[in-house]
Image 1 (tube, rainbow, N blue to C red):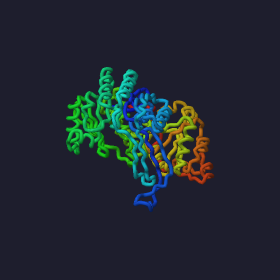
Image 2: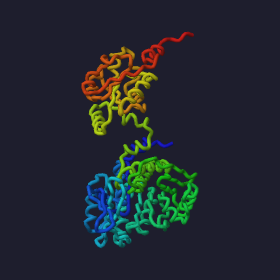
Image 3: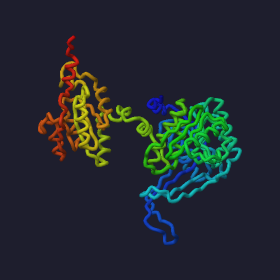
Image 4: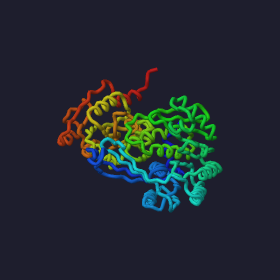
Length: 490
């Protein structure tokens, strides 16, 4: 129903136009160990700080982190924060930005003080001028939008109620986008949603929906009913309600769709809504349909709330969350280039993980192989499987082997949960590969003696061990091949 693999691969081909309230986000991290003697307030010993593009600009950051292009249109003041935002946007090659400078305006800036040990927000300080931009700035914004629209596949209106998205700007954007057949995704603010009339998709959170519709909007039924009424009132194609730990609800023409939230450890929800609308817009730009876009956005939100600060995510992270492990196996587990092997090994060693190794031809996967691999994985934290290349198998097993190509054999191995990495080698023995991996555990079947296992000397010299796994009686690839080739009596 949803070809997420295809859609995620196509995100890099999309361009999204984003218009909204730009702000500078600062995070100051430190430890709190005492109370100030001057007043009953905690004292934070600052360890580090981060400055990043926030507000509607975080939608742009999320789009480009996924490989899409973003055309961003916003307003800043003629101040230090405005200049910092201009420089930060300029550092992203995939963001084309058009900023209207309003000299009398204060650029919105938010500083958050965070206890690093507990990942708790202690205080937020805001500098802002939450009032509508002047008519000249409205004209400039609209002009930039009209010029950029033909190059965009979708439009985002990211409203933080700081004044950039006036009713006049919103109407002009929706009407121009509608005339060109471009979907408009709105991240709304305030109680009067009438200004968003005619938008394609409205994305309030549950509390915003309740306030805008004067309804409780607590249960699935109540949320769906409130969203249905909002959709009718605004003439929108769909309403998507974000509901924190309760997941998301999509109300369109058909039956409402509820999807649960992913079970994750929440570290910081700052900017998660920006991630959601970025993914929605990127998916709708390629005409995926609302439900597919919602499911991708739900997975994306689960990734970013597990990070600190105003976070973004990559396509690889989104794929890892939304696609089953077996469908990612070829891309993430199979290694032909040994330089990539080193990257995996370095990361595992940094984490102090126990690395195991086994090898074979694995021509026709059978229960004996599965038991061997499961036993090998039980003896370590990460299992590397050395796989003989096709020429190597032919030299070892004779003409007519392998039955399956190395690509097919590698894909089957990688689909097994017990296997963390499949590395192809072309030599007759895996000795060179074992020297490269330097495993803590070397595993073979119990038909071997310890001293006959190739690479035992390398592993034991490093302080590792050889583990022999009992075989499953009667299981042999060679026997399977011979049986398949023997004519059956009539």
